[in-house]
Amino acid sequence: MNLEERISDWIDAHEAELVRDIARMVAIPSVGAAPEPGAPFGAGCRRALDEMLAMCREYGFATECYGGAMGSADYNDKPAALDILGHLDVVAPGEGWDSEPFTAVLREDGCLYGRGVDDDKGSTVMALFAMRCLRELGVELSRGCRLLFGTDEESGSGDLRYYYASHAPAPNTFTPDTGFPVYNTEKGMYRAKITRSWPEEDGAPSIVSAEGGFRINVVPAEARAVIRGLDARAALVSGSAAAGRCGVELLAADIPGGCELTVRGLQAHAATPWEGRNAVTALWAVLAELPLGGPAHEAVRALARLLPHGDWRGEAAGIAQSDALSGELSISPGIFSLGGGRLCVECDARVPLCACDANCRVPFEAAFSAAGFTAGGTMTPGHHTPGDGEFVRTLLGCYERFTGLRGECVSTGGGTYVHDIPGGVGFGAYFPGFNTNLHGANERIKVKDALTAAKIFALAIAGVCK
Ligand SMILES: [Zn+2]
Image (cartoon, rainbow, N blue to C red; front, side, top):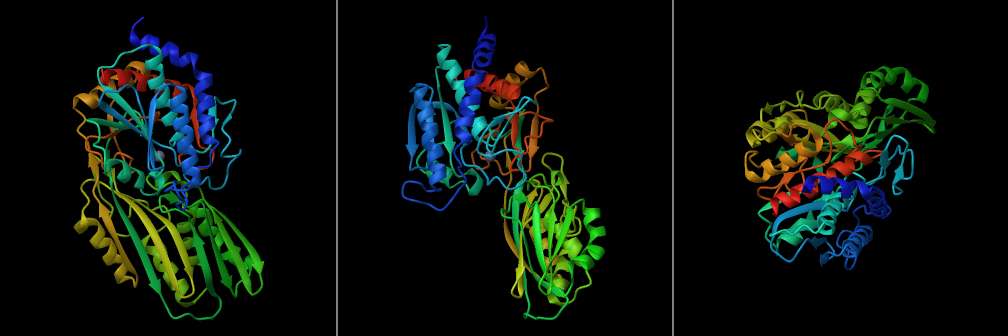
């Protein structure tokens, strides 16, 4: 048998263990939280880190822990030719799950459900199984491979800053925190904060308060508003058509002196806003149609004009643009609050490599300034690793051999984990055409795909570190 066949047989024979070990990691609710002693990203992240370190040791790998921020497992004692960079922190589960998010459940559709099964606990465990497979097959590598697992990918990558402050990146790095085949081009980012304030008035009918969204990089699934001087029935009569056009659910309930509105959309990752239905922009569309007055209503109407529901390209804000390498600009208003005479919107825009201050940040801020808002933010550049180098060609070749599909480089809107690592690429672990519900409810992986991913990783490690 050649190596490819031996890898395939070994991974197939360890399916139950792979599922069990992913479930073991999912069971730890490792949402980033306030620092505690020895736990710079909260106790849950630290527990997940310790569990992963223990698992790596159980499989015979030498491990190290870096300030409670990151951990590593080494294939051998040679300098690493390859770093594999995964993470163990997860985004908050949010609403809409059909099962308990921190209990991995295998359903009849062949999928494993749970927060982190794809992003990125499951993918990290697949990479560990790839290393374990090669070790148990007795494959000698002349160079090293280091599996790194961080605990702050979702909240600012403080883990990477800690580790890379005292360690050089390996000559090659891939993160199994995107999809197959290879993600070598990443958009840049523009995070803008839009504010406006006004002297508080207590006229009616008017908007008392409104809010939606809990993380800037998540398309909000729910938004709410409190209205004074308008009852629930009247709000539904005026607002239902707008809600229908936005494809969201609009609920209204009477409260003393007015009503409370709730809009339910569909959560998605801010890098792919077209996959969700933004409850905040839909709420603006609904509020704009209500017979209200006052400065809060005027401000919301202006937001609905400049960031209309469904306009994820930023056409109305004047920043729509694209290039052949990295694709189209996208924008997602992620966090919104209004009340007490002020409002604030935080937007997450993923910008193509061609975007710069002059054609993106400046016109965006000017458009909002002209409409009576204050807008500001910073742009971070994109990332590109050429697709024709030996490393990327090796990865693509491994993908082709286990899938029979054509391996090619693709671009992503996500600020991936290797955004700041020279020569780094995203590689796995989800497959083209399958929606893992990343960052949403009912996150899932196909178990069959997880096995294939582990095989691809194993062959890639053998190829890069041979
Ligand atoms: Zn991730």
